[in-house]
Image (cartoon, rainbow, N blue to C red; front, side, top):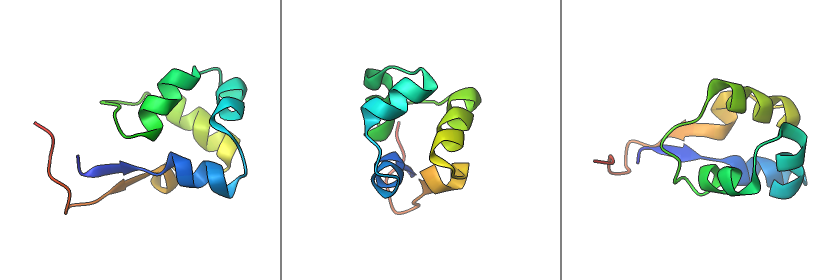
Length: 73
């Protein structure tokens, strides 16, 4: 997929674990893990907003487009 999720990098920058983020935003670790590994097919704006609020970042800090990656079918 051409969209790359950079959640892992932001968590590392903030010295926060996925478990801590999960507790702060009320999303299961399993669902955050799916997002973090790039296996998610979609993300709710409310989830993105919560993640950005906790990590003090912009959506563009978490999601980037890489045209060199093959599109999903």
